[in-house]
Amino acid sequence: MRRRLRRSRLHSVCEEARCPNLNGCFGRGTLAFMLLGDVCTRACGFCGVVTGRPGSVDPNEPRETAAAVASLALRHVVLTSVNRDDLPDQGSLQFARTIAAIRERSPATSIEVLTPDFRGVAREIDRVCDARPEVYNHNVETVPGLYRRVRPGAEYARSLALLERVKTRRPEGATKSGIMLGLGEERHEVIEVLSDLRASGVDAVTIGQYLRPSLRHLAVERYLEPHEFEDLAREAERLGFLHVASGPLVRSSFNADSAWDLLRRLRGAA
Image 1 (cartoon, helix red, strand yellow):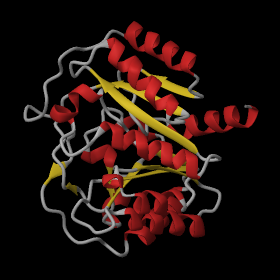
Image 2 (cartoon, one colour):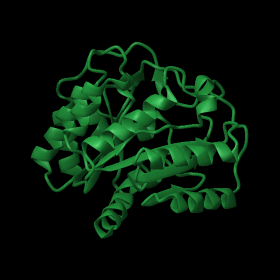
Image 3 (cartoon, rainbow, N blue to C red):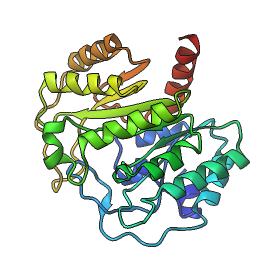
């Protein structure tokens, strides 16, 4: 898998964000492509992706990504990206072009996007939404009281508005979001976030433990017990989420193909 990515000069968030599930996902032939390079314009305290001044956008990236999807015969593909606040379109055009390229090469492959907030610009959100990915994912990451420390440059209300806009614009599509725990949040704050996500029309949620990528990143305030993740999963299901993944090593795109299969069946039966 790594050799295929290197040959095509492609990046995966699995590697760049130092995901603990990397070996398991690569071993079963799944990955999340990271578009628009491997340098992010924001400096979130939890994220292992390099921060700095990104290079130019690679015009061949959509075609190369589509070729990789086809050669790996992926049934479900996840497309994410670094933040590109330096670009006039915030990177939305590259998402749309990549989705179109995959549709042309692999029409049976389902597509999930995990996008930045595009600074809340409606035109850019709509561009990706109108490319019709089966799943539109955008993570709120943490509770609003921790945003200034954990997600500088982001806004909780902006992320909720993005998710609500996507669901309103394309109600037949699935929406998804995620939160990580162990950064100092209280249980009642997590429940409030879950309630806000459901009120914004989100269908699926992932809940995982924050793990410190390096000593330069935010420290883990607390490691939650497995029963706490099980308790939060029950709360999320009670709130009406169609799919809930909650556990210490749960990440946004972990087992995304299986999650989409289940989510599709549940939405069809609803």
